[in-house]
Image (cartoon, rainbow, N blue to C red; front, side, top):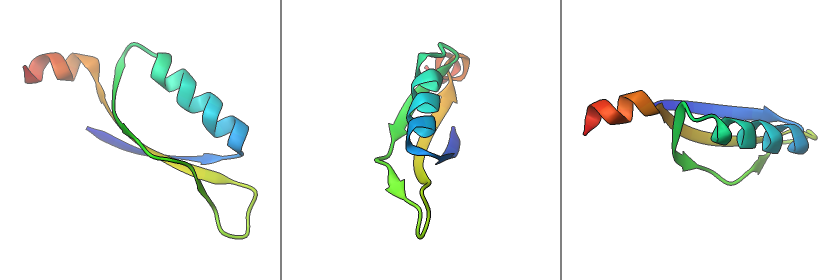
Length: 59
């Protein structure tokens, strides 16, 4: 499992998360809500993913 913190402008974070979800190499295990960064226009989101080939090995 890989834990990723995605940080940027709201539109960038959402677009990147959507693109990552569409990539068939990864399986999303968990995706957090967005959190505002203190004193900033940036937000962050946390995702847990794993390679789909790894999930096939786990079964």
